[in-house]
Length: 57
Image 1 (cartoon, rainbow, N blue to C red):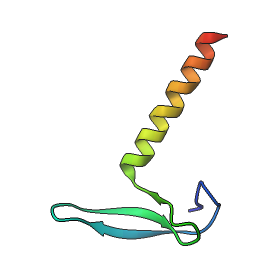
Image 2 (spheres, helix red, strand yellow):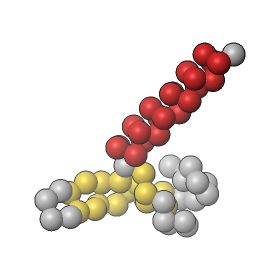
Image 3 (spheres, rainbow, N blue to C red):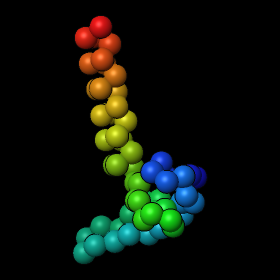
Image 4 (cartoon, rainbow, N blue to C red):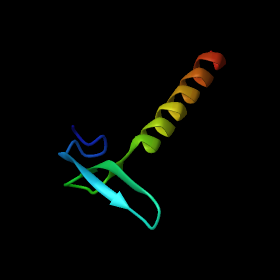
């Protein structure tokens, strides 16, 4: 998987806090982290921007 920010190599990494353990992709070049929630929010945001652009035409 390529990093969407710098096109670097992404590795699957395990993250945890006091109550939650989850896995996310982390870029070894720039340190960007992409998990399921981030990915879903970005896709919803892009979809909302595209629908507004189409409606304003």
